[in-house]
Length: 414
Image (cartoon, rainbow, N blue to C red; front, side):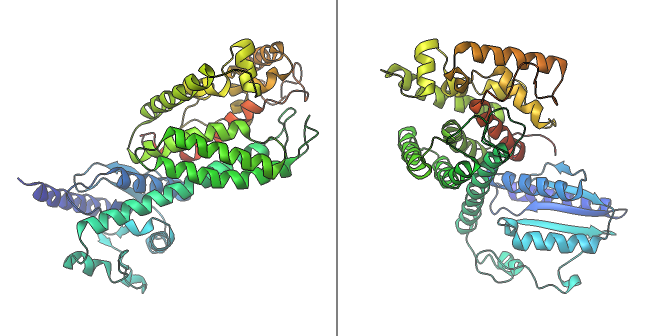
């Protein structure tokens, strides 16, 4: 039996499954029409993951995954008006950046609801704009053109979406309050030389930087050296434009995390594989930096020189234990809980600006707070607004980012 025959059989089985389910319920089907014999690719997985996340968020309804050689698909039972659902799905197909590549079909009483049933014009081909069904039947476009168009658009969508999520994560962190002595939308904390306007302006610059780093990662063999040089240029731009030191740690953190994150998504790797890649690249940077360190120029470098505390470099090299020792993708956490989980574990070099004992006191205090689960009092019995845990704030930004994006890389049921 040829693979083409297997695909036809799988396609028939999918149709039978949908017909059976839709005899007694309204059913939404999600399926990507990938050209060629290989139907399940990293790009089809990304498309399905994006729309599964979107639709489960919209409808708060369970979606069931089905494996198929004709391309994996998802089915959702729906109790509402099937025609209203179909209109929403047509809107998503026509307006979402990668909606053109997925079929969001609605069935009721064993029959599909077509665009014609709703007096809506037939779906256009994403290559030429003509009727997509006619292009499929006539094989108007060759396999490579179709495949490359899908892959390019999915890649561009990921870059755009991830850069915006990363920038939004930084904004969420700035607007997190109470936050000890950090800068927030309420006040400047212990910082006399900066306010929230400095940070919001810096995020606009960093969003451009994030796009650059993600574009690097979208190419299979990007140069770590070139990436670092690009990072240094953006660091200079930040300092020149903002005049004060903002998001230096977050810039370093996201600058390495983002390109490797998108690379793992496009390679269809799981979270464990991604973290191993992150650790490997981070260790290369850490070894180079500390082996060539002559005089501590930054807080992090001084911390290593004086106390052998490795800071953000060591945190990345170890696979971000201040996050992944407690973080579970499907679990909900309060903002205070997330912040404290990080503070209890992180060797935050911003707290060593006073002395090493400050860091130890903070870690000990927060560990006790977690043990007693007193998250809402901001640990005022042993901490006050005289500390500014900037390193923990950077990590909190990354957690905010992960809460919105980890479904793309972590394989689990929706």
